[in-house]
View 1 (tube, one colour):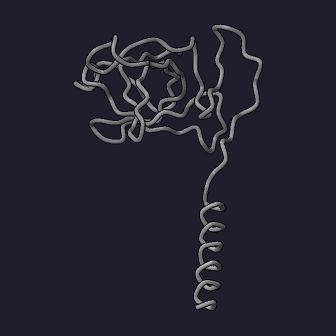
View 2 (cartoon, rainbow, N blue to C red; view 1 turned 180 degrees about the horizontal axis):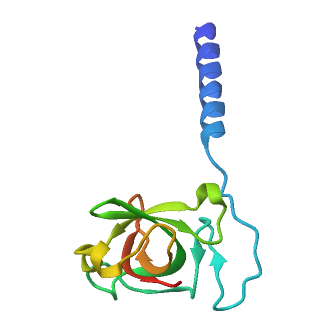
Amino acid sequence: MFKNRTLFFILMMALLVLFAGCSSPNNSLPENGAETGEQSQNDNGESQINGSENGSENDPDSEETKTDSGTYVGLIDNNSIEIKISGVPEESSARAFRLGEEIREGFEERFGLTTGDEVRFNYIPKENEQPVIIEIEKIN
């Protein structure tokens, strides 16, 4: 009986150490001293311009929107694009975004973007999903 308790205790301690080692700490980026209206980074390493506003894919007043800028990489499929976000490390700058209903139809023809174009865009961050772009414009 004593041997079973000891074995159970050791097993539980091993699991505790395993789970503690697998958790990730909250890594925040150092402050970059950006002034109001300039580009800054949030806690997720995402670059942000002009703070946030209210908006959503179907109802612009129902969810928080963010404005960002970066380099257009290209279409992933008919519903998604890839953009390298400005102001974040190169290895984590590429992000996939879902196209909102308003801009999805005829995206390539309407916006005429090519790989390497600098863009500014508004998007709705989605937890556990791709963020949804609701507006995009070429800035160069």
